Amino acid sequence: MRCFPRLLRFATALFLLFLYAGVNVAPAAAGLAPSRVSAVTEIASARDADLLVVQRTLENKVVAQKLRDYGV
Image (cartoon, rainbow, N blue to C red):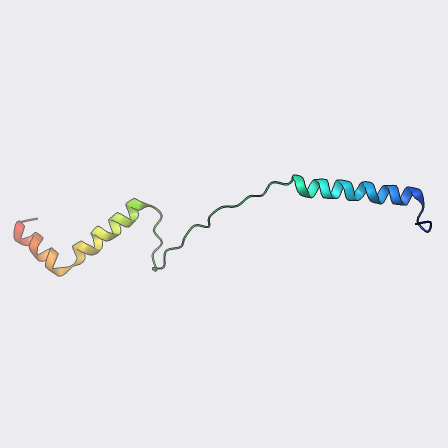
């Protein structure tokens, strides 16, 4: 210990103290990552998903024919 001056030892200890205190004070932030839609179209909300289901249903030929039969 005699090879390092007392001031250098004190400064190093002080630096390490502040370094460790600063690292431990930082809060941890965690959360769930949003899931991605696996289809080509991205659905932003539940309403968009419902509209997409209705649109695909109406595109079905059988349903379209039944609606024509009912006069819609």
